[in-house]
Image 1: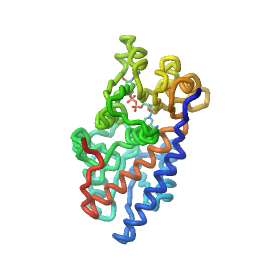
Image 2: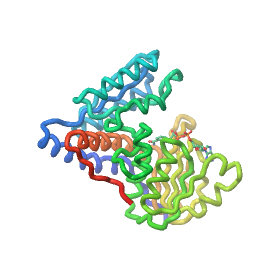
Image 3: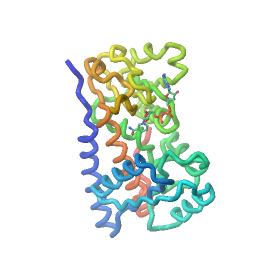
Length: 295
Ligand code: NAD
């Protein structure tokens, strides 16, 4: 029997509806709504189209979202000054820096410029450290979206074998911490796992498998453990089509749950950005220090 498809658009809509109710309550309480700013250098069509999709989602939820476009030649210091102004503006509650940034920009330094309480993407090193300790409400958006998909299956992760393929700073590493917080037994695979020809062995034991590499067809369907939850974060262009890192058709015959690409993790990621914006607003306006994550 073929696995259940985890429909990202459906899940995104459900969370959007919840967030929109929350924003209405906040509006009644504070007379305002969260105001988020996306700082973009340049105007690459792909980046603009992603920003448009963020804007549409913000509108659905009732959040104010502004795209601020600066020339791609903007210097590091100018960008840092711009961020400082937004940090100090009490009318702005959340800031994100659109990626990719031009090569002359030091992204790590920029991330640390964003005020901790306005850091929509969790890129300030303090928020990264706090996440490690379970002390922040701001969770990087893609790992948060993966966790929402897993949560939607209703499967309890405690004691389950979870394998994350890909160990990037923005997906694999933070995700492994979130899985650990749910008491899964977590393995992280990466390029050296493949070089050592151990990838298939790890995947064979994975009850929860998350793949975030960016290589079409890296994970063969027959490697998947029967009954696994498979979350494919990868985005690859193949012959004009978008595909993930997992061989979808054969994997879905073995998995209990599987995300499609496109239409799986992507739509939920955008909504997680908005959720971070709402958490940032609540923190700033209501000093809401309730922890979403705790061991
Ligand atoms: P990255 O390039 O920063 O990291 C890739 C990781 O994969 C590295 O840890 C590397 O060691 C590992 N890797 C490379 N080749 C491998 C192999 N043959 N076997 C095992 N591991 C290997 O990538 P990233 O920024 O984390 O993005 C990964 C993928 O996820 C990309 O396709 C990206 O487009 C996609 N992505 C999707 C979303 C979303 O919201 N859907 C968000 C971010 C990234």
